[in-house]
Image (cartoon, rainbow, N blue to C red; front, side, top):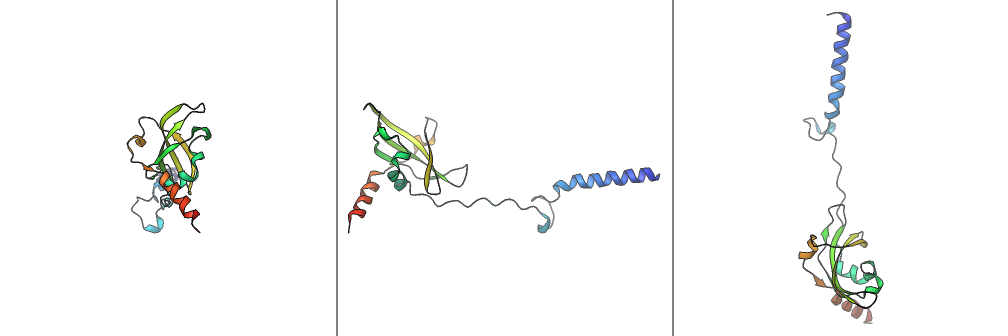
Length: 150
């Protein structure tokens, strides 16, 4: 082997080592823990929110002002797969701005850090259709009684 070939072989061996080094320190490699790249820790999950209290206190964040929601009911909170927050379903009897009954309408609310930050009306393919609901009115009445006591 000539000197040029030795340099070329060394250069190729170095290139192979550099290129293969990209995967050497990943979390699945058979290397000491100190050399492995640590996977990012997932953000901690929030505590489940009190959906009844949130919805009762912020009906205007779920329903439009003129819709006059009655028989408001909520489902249990479920972890939002898109982050650390929660989702829940809210159902109520609504009225149009001209006074015409709209019937039962269902919305999915998105809750983060104890606040409702978004809501969407659900379609027939949403799991809100099969959820179990509890009335919110009893929570509103209980809150009113607690605050009225001396």
